[in-house]
Image (tube, rainbow, N blue to C red):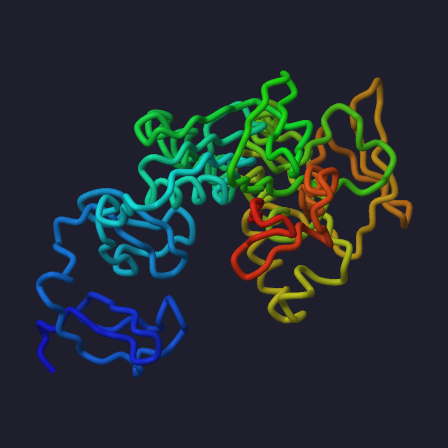
Length: 371
């Protein structure tokens, strides 16, 4: 086989890959490298190397630039896991009937929806409503921000000017209080009415706070937004005693980030070992050893009874076995719950989340939802 072969075709689904070797697996259907065969493209169908868009084969992240990034900001893949994508201008479909689209939510799902609409329709009106005060950012990078590995600019999905350049009206620090699927409009807290042809609910989730006494004390935080991270950073000082409640991925990353900032961190896990749904006990022991090297103290089978305070400030965590852990701050990382209130008020079908079909369409054909 020629070493100059740079194009491969998946014999299962037809996906075309460009590189010196086929990918380990097809990003479309999951077929193995053995299911790829050399493929000759016509010059009309070939993507020229001048393309400035690169797609991550691991997670689908799209990077714009002359070359792929050194590391995917979403999944950490190296540049070899990126491939050229067609120029987005080539994907425009001028025959698409323009629509008035309203997107509720400024996370990656909302931004991806806006990108997809603009990619196929130059003339559609796009309005994105976010309750957060800053432009959309990568929520998965918040713990890296907390650890000081990246600054605020490293959080952003796009520069603020990108939304204006792509004619996307971005409304930040706004809340939607009502949704009428019969009259097809949403109402903002300030009284502004936004009419739509298609509505996309991408409202994400909110932190779950267990019903234990003391969660309203000063010094008790959750970790879900950039504002949460900033508030935690204001509180952290070298040597401050911090208790992280919850030994899931977020709790582990938060505890590690705070330890890197110099905090005295204790992580509470309610089970007998870390991540029992993902790891067996031996694997959890290895993870525990890594936490110790980071300077995080782990308390297993630790169930919180209450957060005790003094003068309105949290000062210790009281466990159900009677033990007390003195602290100057507490971060609750006990999971999340989907934001379904707006869909429920509007009468859309909701189970644990908003119910959608294979095309992300809800029980109303003009309303879509993505988490």
